[in-house]
Image 1 (cartoon, one colour):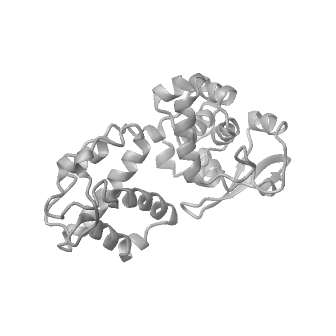
Image 2 (cartoon, rainbow, N blue to C red):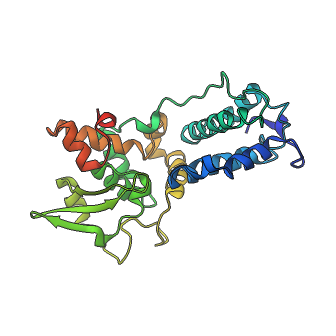
Image 3 (tube, rainbow, N blue to C red):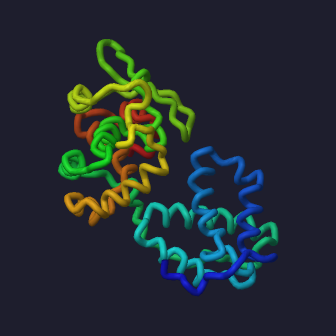
Length: 274
């Protein structure tokens, strides 16, 4: 990371880490969804470390230092965006409780361009399916054809598949919203899954045979995209697995589905689909 000047030996009284801990112990933070607590919790624990922002005095921390911290995450735009969102909410909560004497994120900028929601093109999906290793080819296929979040993809089991009116699909209880949906399989997905080995348990497995976690999918995809030369176009485009949720929407729209139909099939609000 590029913020070497922020390093300190330990956490002391009156430091920013104490504000982070107070926020994460608050009813406000505990009231967030499980997915948000998990995601923002990881970012806040990173910011809490003595070698990042944690050891800074609440009187010393300022936007310039937060910007340096964000710049150190520029190679991981998804993590960078989530971290800034978490810090903004912490700032809002802490200032009105006199736990921070001044704003710390005003003017802080990141490179994020909502890339997590940018759909992959057909060519990009096919490239990933052909050349991605470590089980990511199957993840890409399943995500592009069901439009589900990573947290729901990793929980899909073979026993969740059900035929309705002769068409196979999969039952999903979305982790973020708790919404229960049945996602119909597309013909490309039916064809692809016909060649997948069926084992008891989860559909998506790591090469070691153990299930994925959402966090592991995100982290390992960054490494795979970086280290696999065949995926360099995907790296240059900054594509992330979550973007395949939008890909599924685009595919359904081009196939003639209405916004309402896409919303029902994928479990996304009509406003977001539009």
